[in-house]
Amino acid sequence: MPSVAWSGTVCVVDDDETIRDVLSAAFDADGFRVESFGDGELFLARDSHEPPACVLLDVLMPGRSGLDVLRELNARGSVVPVIMISGSADIPTAVDAIRHGALDFIEKPFDPLDVLQRVRNALAASEARADATLRSGRAGEIPGADALTPREREVLILVAGGQSNKEAGRRLGISPRTIEVHRARIMEKLGAKNAADLVRIVMSATEGR
Image (tube, one colour):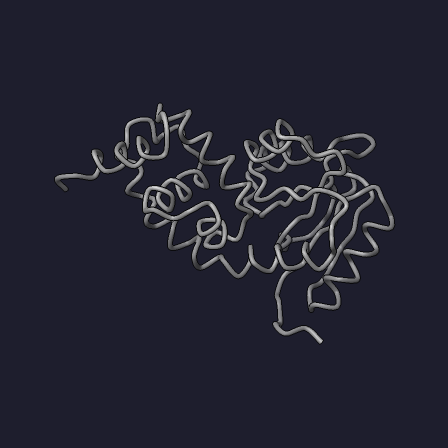
């Protein structure tokens, strides 16, 4: 029996029928509504007035890849959280996925219960993300902050506030590895040489207010 009554639908997009079946069973048992799709085109053609609560999207599929689908969602202005799944994960692929808005990146083979927990964490962290978004308004005064994505602004405030990758990941419902990728991109955009330099940039922008 599910411990929490979840609202919303989880969409599983993967060309592997076994993966779809296993994840669908896990989410169904936990109280989620589940829709599964064998390729990206079928998912993009989904006809529903209700956006999904979360999308699990395989990177490598016939036809349009998971990254292609992610870019299309961005072009449509979607704010639905997307978790990428890949059987041939590498850092450049993960960076590309996160750069295009993926919430997290999971490598195959995986434990379905771990995937379930990571989705639960992401959804349960919505209040923390909303709070971080409000606080991230302070980031607008930092030189170069206009180049940051909303997620990067959230990460910036948490990291500059002294939270570790693990702590920030728990607060935002994403993995420490994903936080690490975001932090590297933030440092590159703001011209910070290291974490201490990043904190100094934030403090100098907020002093005297």
